[in-house]
Image (cartoon, helix red, strand yellow):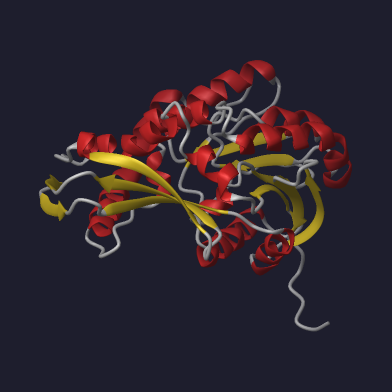
Length: 328
């Protein structure tokens, strides 16, 4: 196996690259009238491990549904993508679904991109045992920003963006991310993306507020991370996890709600919250079929094919970057 970074370097670079951005986003978000912190900061090592636990919960349908779709249609997907492409995964996490795609398309190389370097490298090491002869080039980065990918000769690039992570971003930012991915991957590249469908709140809310409280710990871990990394004094026990369905915006919202009035400091700055005030930590926007295709087109991608499960809970779409047309 070929690796371009070792475990120690990646972990150290992860801390140095993102520390100042984390502080900026937290301080700016806590100062807003409607307090909000970007969802990407939920994923430190502990948060990433908790999220992997979430994906195995009975209430959390997206992961197992998407995996079933990929298993059922892997050969068809490969017939459309062609073989021997580089697979670039955005927000790779534990890469649990990745082997299905790597095997199906007979990938020339794999480039996992994740913001948590420590978790990324542990996943890469595990994956290398399954694909010992395939070059793997891990990249520690915020994939919402333009990236320079490793130079690899192949038959093209296939972006892989599973898990409906695109739903974490409000539509203008989702379009911008898709445009950034198109720029990163280049003309002729393809993108295999998972997008969650709109469905009744009775199915959605338990998926983000499970009976065992794992999602609650995932959300509350953000406060623990702030205390640990930004000299915070947030009383974590004074907050609770809340999941809401926002019908108007077609999204699940995760919040951290103050149970009582609290005062605390972060990086030397003082903040106060009243009982019932919240910190908005994550969105998960759900899309109908036409909405999803329009979103891709707005981001510079031409949809090629779409697959769903029998209950139409989730969809996987294949799209391609094509030259911009200025006339019909």
